[in-house]
Image 1 (cartoon, rainbow, N blue to C red):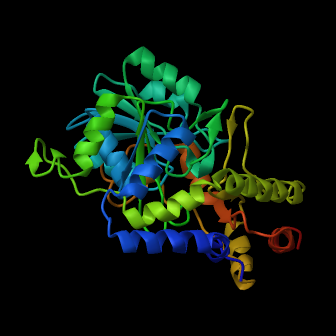
Image 2 (spheres, one colour; image 1 turned 60 degrees about the vertical axis):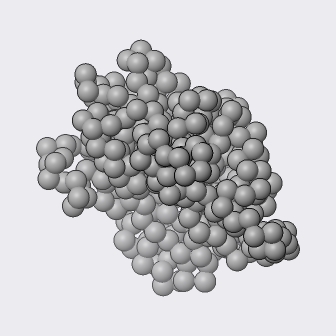
Length: 365
């Protein structure tokens, strides 16, 4: 069996360090916003090159709280992509704002700056690009659009921890960035977790207040807040992995590049890398008109595979009545032909050769 992500191999590498940290935490009985959360926030802020990093309970919460902190509310329009996990649009809906879905770039699968520009109305208050699958979005153009229209820029970095654009980390470019530490992420916890980053003192103060029941001082509450704190035990695990994140991401890039080399002669579309952003391959997504045949062959050979994302957000049951007239041809085409192959730093070259040989067997039969 070749899994999509080999978390067991990763755990074996960090087991001793993690178990020591967990034992110390349990012994100290400091479980909520304790020393490991505080240390992790400082370490991630330094790594990402931002002034503030605030741990929260999930990537979805990170997006939600960032929107509130940036003043996005009822009736506001937030332009985003329909080719992403639903949390992106859920967070917009949570604050009473309206997701405005626009099409994607056919090479990167990220939101199209041209489509953003065409969708701006007087109600538009923010842009929420997603750095999908670990590929940085075209932030230079998106930032210029936001500045020219006085819009907030909130980066969905839930799949892009460690990805950079001309040396600047994703999340450090907009007004705020939101990260997820779901276990399968490039930087993953042993449960849920998230992070909001910002260079704004005001935004950081609001996030800290919102994550802790609207309180700056214990038992004194100034706004209605949430219970959304990164867990101390998860912070122990994340600190151990953060030390190795560049190694992990380089391992993912090695896997991706070997896949691309081995499939160069096959009738599939492999991921595109531009010369501006460094892709960190949270997922390795391929396009093929023969997707179903390939997936069946992979499954028959006990090789992990998945479809991200089979139904774009504007066509999901929860949204489709509202967006019945919306047509996103590139998004819809990619959703019909995309599939993901196993990718993680612990995937061996032999396994990659085996996976590609199965695909080759389908496409050259």
